[in-house]
Amino acid sequence: MILLLTALVLGVCGGPDPRAEAAAPEKILVGVVTGLTGKFAGFGEGGAFGVKAAVEDINKLGGIYVKEYGRKLPIKLITVDSESDPTKAGTLAQDLILRDKIQFIVNGIDPPHTRAPIATVTERYKVPHISGVGPYEAWMGLRNAVEKPWQYTWTPSFAIATPAKPGDFRAGKLGYNMMDSWVGALDEIGRITNKRVAAFASDEPDGRGWYLSFSPVVVKKGWDVYRVKDEFGLVPEDTTDFTALIKAWKDYDCEVLWSNSPAPFFGAMWRQARMLGFKPKMAYATRSGLFYSDIKAWGGDLPHAVCNEMFWNPSIKDSPGIGTTTPQSLHERWVKKTGQPLHQNAGMGYQAVQILIDAIERAGSLDAEKINGALKKTDLMTIYHRVVFDDENFSRHPVSFGQWLKTDKPYVWENPVVISQHDFLPATADLLFPIPYK
Image (cartoon, rainbow, N blue to C red; front, side):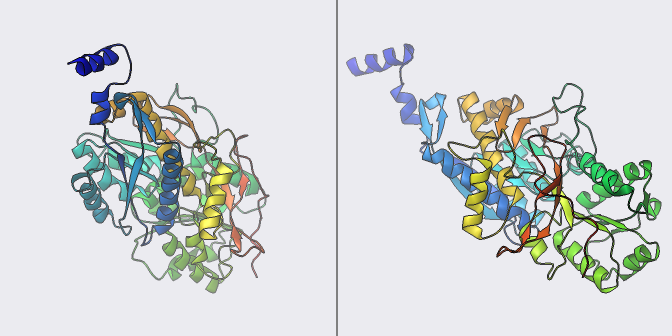
């Protein structure tokens, strides 16, 4: 009786409640569903690394403090390979929830159609899901197509051309959608080209969303996008012979190639372009040019001077990690483990865990509803700068412009920032223009 009264008094007076501690789980269960193999493995390897690094960092500090239990709880991480197959991704997410009893799903960034099945599952089971999803426009097309837009999926990601809404701290600022970066680059080279663009994309949600967003804006800027009205260059994913497209671009003297597709798809087209003598002054490979393992697979010197969207970079300032981790030290961990240069998705995967930690600590609970409510109020400086979600559960990333350059380092290729509109994400190299073909 005395022990029971003592316990009750401690609980009322604000001391640790032994009953709450006894009820606490041993670990917080977190799942990752991403493509570690298949055509989107470039995304998965970096994102999974970043998530794991963040989990290691918080566990070194004892875990996440959960007020409801009066103590810290470590994270147990379970990562599964979707093989870049959207159908498998949804099934694996359900298995993690029902069989492994995971409480949250996190990830770096993946193409939108690979995250949509996961969002459907996490909505059904009310499991908070934090992941980049490719461009805003393609993602919202998928999100708004369902009867009730997903409320348990939170998406720190990027937009192609849609500006932030009034009241958002990013509203009216350059560098918070890809179009700012693209137009900035086009403005820089416009006076030294004929302003003729070959637009190339795979015909699926990401590629189509990009093609239909990019082309009209560029046309209004005074650029000539080849046969944009009949969507020339928007081609099925099973295409293997690009001769007709390449010949048409070459005959029209397109001096700029701008694209969005999976990396192997672009690589096949770019290889054929070189064989057929199509040598634009600039080539931009959005999505396909993001990651080292992808561009290296193109072979030879094909990656040299190919440009890409630049997201997280170790040069980013005012972007804290967990404990003593910084953007640069996270990058160095990646290089040490893999022997590869920068992987942008490492920072994005790391950030997803930071967002989850912050929401759990503010909610003071592992209850999904409370954490979902806390995510709605997120305002957090992360390893990839500031995260604030809007009323569509979306937080815009700062973006800049990168370019693959040949080096004398063992991994040969590096991807510095060459154009940026952010003081906190500075350019670290000059734009190489035109492409120095051999």
